[in-house]
Amino acid sequence: MKTVQDYFNQYRDYSMNEIEKRAEEINEEVDNNPNADVKEFNIEIEGLMKVKENILEKQDKSQEERSFNPITQMNFKEEVPTENIFDSKEYRSAFFKQMLGQELTNIEQRTFDTAMEKQKVEGRANNFNTATNSSAVLPTQTLNEVIKLAKKQGGLLAHVRSFNMPTKISIPIGTPHDKAQWHPEGKEVDAEVVETASVQFDGYEILKVFSISAKAHKMSIQAFESYVTEELTSCVMEAIADAVVNGDGIEKGTGLIEGIEWTEENTLDLNGEYVDFAKALAKLKRGYASNSKFAMSNATLYNFVYTIVDNNNRPIFIQDPRNESVGHILGKEVIIDDHIEDGVILLGDFNYMGVNISDGMMLEVSRESSFRSGLIDYRAMAIADTKPLVDEAFLKLTVPAVEEV
Image (cartoon, rainbow, N blue to C red; front, side):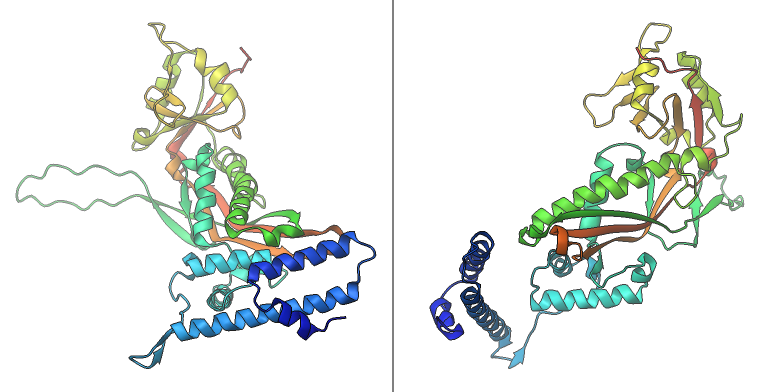
């Protein structure tokens, strides 16, 4: 039987990939062959590990030599990013390696540790109420990709105003004001008092747990990031998109339907005639009509609006095949959002509907379940809220009955 030193000598000229490949072959042999000599394989594995440690030690030493400047006699080491650490490439790489259980380089480990300390100082870990020490804030680039992908999927989420503000803080919101006036020379001009509204976002938790095979540690960073982005878009951002419309403010965000007090002043019953839409636009308060849009479900559009024509028998809804928008009604863009109840049309400037994700998103990993199931659990968390910013920016139009055509 060979010793650990014998195996070390046998594999010492192997590359890192060749060592990992041989280790996988041994694992497969042990799993599939009941007569395998496990004791001898353990000795071989230990020899492979010694070779791997030797390779890593040489790499670290080589890195230190390359960082030494013989002219200035100074040793320059890779420095941990001091500004926007969550937006750095070092943190992004370290984050996904940590989630996959892969080995971090020296600079990645130091960057990740620094980010964890910053996370504690900012109180993000306390806000998210994490249960393990394997939780970390999503890299800024990945979070931006999640939001970008969510907006590409359409709906009101792509048109509302996004915030990244602390909770329980009153935020002033500017409202449309009067235009500048012609000034007679020498005449005193009175200052205009700008009208403002304010909003205070609360912090509600959004959680989603998803599990993948323990083989995930073999995935590339790019593949795992793409997978996480898709998961967060389909679950966390979908929950926010629903709250934008239907949130009731009870342990969740407040939406347009429940968050605005609908009265005779801001509602209108439609009769199926094109003049109804002109009346709605005329009813919208000043300053909001110029950027207003119609939002409705797909069924409302094609079962009700699509068949309405004007006095010249021309359809009121004009499809727009050249741009990304669905189409227009009286020159106003139409947004399709199936979170809106059939028979309801929302009209307004959706810049005055707000979504706040205060602390970004956090991903937490747990490998406890893998003992019996072979799975790794990931828990995605976000602290978010939704609120209408200015009620007078919106109207609700009600269709008498949406009948299928």
